[in-house]
Amino acid sequence: MATQISPCSSLNQETLSSAKLFNFSKKSFPSRWVFKIHSKFNQFELKSSNGYPLNAVSLQDGAAEKPLAKEVALPEQTESNLSVTVVGASGDLAKKKIFPALFALFYEDCLPQNFIIFGYARTKMTDEELRENISRTLTCRIDKRENCGDKMEEFLARCFYHSGQYNSEQNFTELDDKLKQKEDGKSSNRLFYLSIPPNIFVDAVRCASGKASSKTGWTRVIVEKPFGRDSESSAELTRSLKKYLAEDQIFRIDHYLGKELVENLSVLRFSNLVFEPLWSRNYIRNVQFIFSEDFGTEGRGGYFDNYGIIRDIMQNHLLQILALFAMETPVSLDAEDIRNEKVKVLRSMRRLNLEDVVIGQYKGQSIGGKSYLGYTEDPTVPNNSLTPTFAAAALFIDNARWDGVPFLMKAGKALNTRRAEIRVQFRHVPGNLYKRNFGMDMDKATNELVLRVQPDEAIYLKVNNKVPGLGMRLDRSDLNLLYRTRYPKEIPDAYERLLLDAIEGERRLFIRSDELDAAWSIFTPLLKELETKKIAPELYPYGSRGPVGAHYLAAKYNVRWGDIAGEE
Ligand SMILES: NC(=O)C1=CN([C@@H]2O[C@H](COP(=O)(O)OP(=O)(O)OC[C@H]3O[C@@H](n4cnc5c(N)ncnc54)[C@H](OP(=O)(O)O)[C@@H]3O)[C@@H](O)[C@H]2O)C=CC1
Ligand SMILES: O=C1O[C@H](COP(=O)(O)O)[C@@H](O)[C@H](O)[C@H]1O
Image 1 (cartoon, rainbow, N blue to C red):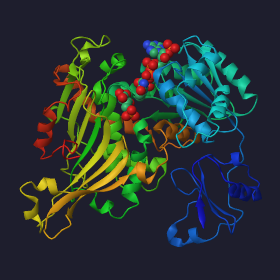
Image 2 (cartoon, rainbow, N blue to C red):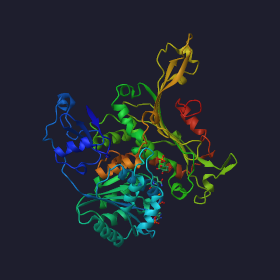
Image 3 (cartoon, rainbow, N blue to C red):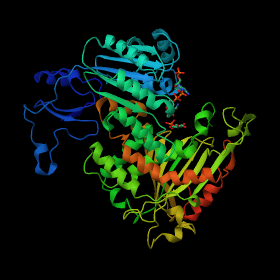
Image 4 (cartoon, rainbow, N blue to C red):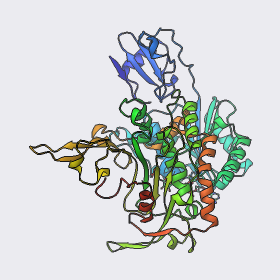
């Protein structure tokens, strides 16, 4: 019987003893390869995290069924150091997401034996102070608390800090000296995570690549969004980064691509016969991508006012999900094959028109005796700001599969709920025999597939069903795959998956520069028009469902938002 060992952690004794036959240590395998052990025969099947066999053979020729020969090519043993430098280590994202994700990877045994982490920022701090700061945000998974305290101590002991300016070659040379000292003369791979505001990305990359890149291994740089404000500034950023780095060293992160349900989208589509045949204009009436947060931009007003919700959420997170949803079947699960398909579908999209967009901005509201400030009442936001905190848009893909199908997006801050989901509304059943049982509103009887990305991850399909009894009453019910019931283990944070991928050189979930160009082309003309015409956003109360304009926009295309009350 084949046993699947989960990513990174705890290669069990059986695996290890089998591995010894081949003279490999646990650390000699790239950490996330999955071993299938056919214990009787001591066979290994090596897989990378995308499930694609490294020694891939076509299933058709039956070779996959044959036992693997003992001489099967296995990876070279490497004992490289890994040095991760978090640039902007004093900031919000570093504390909230990056250090906790690195700790989770360490806990799961996903990091190489020899790894160190450096925090880098202007703030003056000692190593101890950095450890103190980050220790407050490290947590263990609910189901994995064993030795948690010890693991944290071990992890913190590998964290160091260097204070410096982002544009100082001298300061990065000092960092390089410290890195070398800790790397202890071993060959070393270096990963830089740019967790800083975008105006200093290029300076930091220039200095890091010029003065602190690895001389003995790879150097990679994770770049956080925003990747520019429009097509031109994005292209300029790409050009500048490419002066110092090759494209394959740049890992543009969109953390939504690391979310479990987004990862699962392709699995759902391409590994189930029941979905892919329906995945086109023939059966799908519309698709909705919905993002909402029940808090405003408090504390991030300075950043947000320069970008707005379209750049913050739609042009990247929602559009990336849309591309995965709508792309053609890739040739393989290889990163370039997937990204090629995403680029194609993005390039088939129509540029957004002002008529197909509604924008809003939240205003102050008192809820349950507590008052919530409006967007422009935040001291870091100009009083007369027209920056949208809400937007809804209707997008179209002009290709054979999707011609005429509205892809609706809705994203907003300070709404009534926090959620991210994909809703697929199917067409009416032609000549439906049960039409009479549904009443006048046939839309209410159509099937809807919902992928709830967060919170409470789930996939459910709304189907019509007979209410048990002697009569013929129909009911809309859910076929529900609720993750917390089916998979009670805690789901890793998106940043864990993405950091691990960057360490392993897996680029599938990172944005290639041509994808980025295609994504900006869709939104740039609209963003410019909104700004030059100074279009005023529709005000909506903090904690509400957002502007009513969003409903008119959907109605224009015969669509009802699936997340409205009673429809969820
Ligand atoms: N926070 C979040 O939830 C998310 C953030 N991002 C992106 O990640 C990156 C980091 O975000 P976040 O941590 O929130 O950012 P912060 O504003 O907290 O900045 C990070 C660090 O950069 C330094 N810094 C801030 N402003 C400047 C400046 N004007 N000039 C030079 N240095 C500055 C500060 O360190 P010091 O003063 O010590 O040098 C600060 O601690 C940004 O690009 C952001 O857009 C993306 C998704 C979500
Ligand atoms: O990139 C961003 O994402 C967060 C939302 O991320 P989530 O994983 O918590 O859903 C959003 O709040 C922020 O404005 C945006 O920059």
